Amino acid sequence: MQNRERWAGLRRPFLTGLALGVFLLLLPLAALGGGEERPVEVLPASPTPAVGSAPGGAPSVTGELNDGKALRVLQNDGTVVTMSMADYLLGVVSAEMPASFEPEALKAQAVCARTYALWRAQAGSHAAEGADVCADSSCCQAYLSPGDAAARWGAHAAEYTAKLSAAVAGTDGQVLTYGGSLIQAVFFSSAAGATEDAAAVWGSTLPYLVSVDSPEGDEVPNYRSTVTLSAGEIKALAEEAGLGCDLSGDPAGWFSGLTRTVSGRVASLSLGGVSMTGGAARSLFSLRSAAFDVACDGGSFTFSVTGYGHGVGLSQYGANALAKDGASWREIVEHYYTGVTIQEGV
Ligand SMILES: [Zn+2]
Image (cartoon, rainbow, N blue to C red):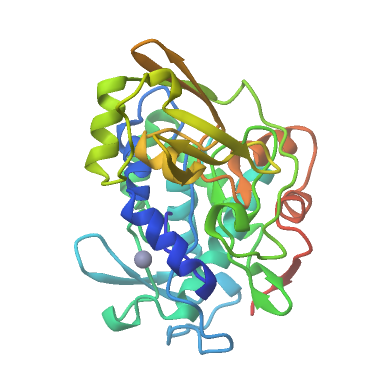
């Protein structure tokens, strides 16, 4: 799921990011397939939540499981389908995390997805459409219907359906809170050694979204990637974005002043005298993350990139690495979301 920011302070910087084409970063997701396990990232969502508001007016159904409660899901065709939270989460985990991942990583993902969905419902993001969440990966969380998931998994369909259903049921009703409120359980695909502070990416601090170590590495598909652009292509992109860069001189001097965040991602750099954030550069040059170096080779530039996604919150491949090392889903979410409380329901 990629969303707008969920807290007021992030609205302006995030919209600025949008203007620079942040959502273009999502496009590579659609192009992935076959051998590569689909990486995902989740950005904060708007609007700002009304703390303490009713949970989106979602109807409840009687059931022994917390996840038996109904959720209204706006489909991509515009219809609203009411389904149980359990069924919704199965579809989200199917879409957002490779089903081959460790069971405890899948449980951590299910808890993130449940927390996120309830957060969106509480915020009333889709109240005007009579829904709690939507199935658009560029807005809320991606959702795969059982049929679509089975088609994706082929011969593994029955095995993976059972595995992911167990991840959902095994965390029934469990959500993450901080200070008594649902957290913004953002996540992303893979980090370059550490996650990022929310403040470094979106401009506002959240105490549970701060940089922590993340153990994944070269086992991640396309963990290291490169993007090579000619000087002419750089110039065209800068002009298209209306940045006002002065790119009249020697290309070797176009990029300067690169600074890094505490996690090692690019905090800011200057292109032709115009300063931009690492996130803006990531968007402008379609890089998989802001953890990059750039080198000039005469008439072209090569960006060497590590990891994939915005870097804030839970790293999916990091969660899988922790699970392989014996961590429980509780340990995983407590690692990536600093100081949160795991509790049943809200
Ligand atoms: Zn949505």
